[in-house]
View 1 (cartoon, rainbow over the protein chains, first blue to last red):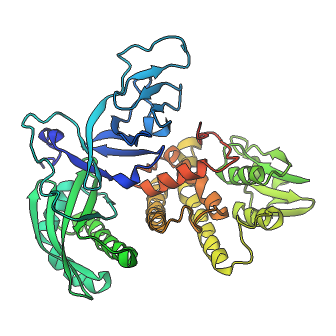
View 2 (tube, rainbow over the protein chains, first blue to last red):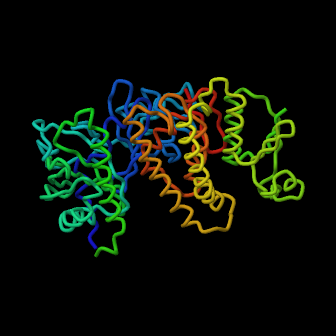
Length: 256
Length: 211
């Protein structure tokens, strides 16, 4: 079986977490293509996507402290500056300037369309519009991300071939169904979501973020502004839909 | 005088050490050698709690077992703010007790996994981890929707309740049982908030938030 995690995907930009979930002084722990990540925002709002590994003894930076200007490692208190990842202070040698080789491995990251996007390696063919099909013209609302214990390939293939019919069967309890599901690129699908009660349809984008070979985060977003009065209901509806998609994909072998 | 029969590495005992500290109540800690001594199964301790479990609280002869039950007693008796367990609010009480039971299930799964990995207990480790993940998934979804409604805690919006205390330690220690919290970002944000509670205390494996 060809792994979906082909090395060439390391040059792609992936959505990793909704921007609003990377809050003040928090460190969001994640993965991308088997690479562990620590994602955090400094007090100026600048986003960082770092390898989740202290250069000192390999401790996860995500259990450390986000001071607003740096990450402080939990075990020996080594500090690493926002953006550069450079070690700025070693408590055991407080008067010494830390060697430049003590630097966290940092990854390119940007914030757009409500997500933090991360790329593990420099893309040789720098794409002018790397986040297509998303564009500035759309009015996007990000929904709850759904962590799924299934490979990205399985989820994508099932969404394209079996999802529409199976969801239609379940839709009375879900309150919505998906139709016209099509692949836009290897990790992005587009679909039409139909609200069963109102018959209203809205364009939806479904991003697949490979954590590891066996786990994926589904990041769905709709091309619509959702008004505050119905926001909670709509979020619950979509969460039920994607929870069902998750459950089916995790059941896995029984399907194929 | 309150006596707490306690074991340092027990998350259930931590719940009470934590809450007694919040309430600023003096107490006498009586250590019981859970491991390797298995003192909680000794004759003298079985006289105190026939179930042979920690923690046990003895308040001038009132003897209570079960961390969740003890939390409710301490809150009802000593919490002048009435916020940790609002006895006059039936709706919130119902919710809190729902999640106190949930916390018990966390003990049965995540704590069991930790006992297996850390103290070499013999049990079905795969089932323990699988059950923990099921529970964490439910709590993560609950907390995500709570955040959407500006609610910072499991049952309440601004002030934590004993439901948060009850669920916290074995979730925070889950990695010691091989249960990763990577798939539960809403839980991770909630544990961050919990560690910011004034007078938060640490235990082995649970770090103070730092300043």
